[in-house]
Image (cartoon, rainbow, N blue to C red):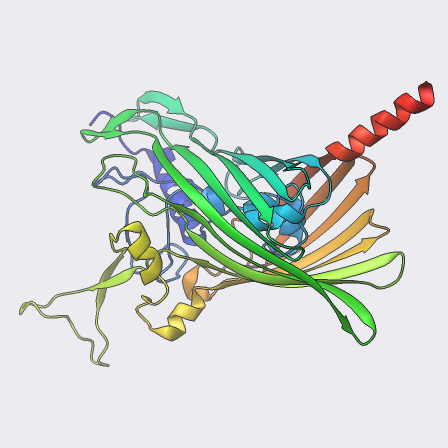
Length: 430
């Protein structure tokens, strides 16, 4: 055996299974039987006591990249667009204010479990076209999983590795009218969880995939009790792409194809203050795990005294991508009731004073049998001339939770404001 699973790798596997259950990170345990970095078979009861959790490869793509959205409970498909909006909904980027901007975000990830896992996000946009009705945007996300030490079966050092994952995407959005816009994105994904190694005679290699996003955004105004409200609705399907493999083409896993719909409303309290709030519904368009029942000596499903069947394990069907997306809308073993539990909910609000200082709060909910993520979030933001800074804080409702005290930081840079500032400075000097 060239590489054995020592206590370090076993620890990584434990963290991996927790993370997969929560759909939060790309840490992956290497299976001693398949050497697949993210296999389709999972236990009937996972490490957190939850059942039938949908898991995918490269779940780092689902991490909220910006502190503004994170401060509102991971709300973003219909909020006003900023430089990070391409992650949430490429369609809304056509209505972004300003001719161009850049954003840089960073977050220590799962720091209550491991000290050296970091997530970074760089994004930017530019208006295009004679009437500036179109917007080109792009982003780079980078996920560093720290250092792993390998040993052989006798505990002798066999080197170390630093797993990492990244994606690069490019999008284009267009205003179809004064109220409606549409956008598309294309994305390259690279997941190098282990440098090229051989484990139990199987080559382990980086996983690669190409995916795309579709997004639509509609905004309008309405008067309610003599107060004007700006409202918007958004919908996006993201990460539609090929399955990914770390070993052979016969062992491939879904990436996190995702459907998100939501709305956001905002109004001015007075000339100095405004407030907004919204809600998002989010669902993975990936087949639900299906039960494999224990067989009795007659080759029939084993039945408990109460009439229920004994489940041996859960497995994810190996459906084609498009078929799997369609099937995912109605394949939960528990029927319609369980299917509805696969929708995650984000509720959030944002208060602005003088368009310079912001306070945010939110709540994220996931059904107990689908991952059990339940947490509140808080955030603050400041805008000053060409710069902006957002900070968010996450507080789970469970103690000793992997996401406990997660902090995110995002720095924004307004290119249009910078150009105007330089022009004004040049004019004053001359």
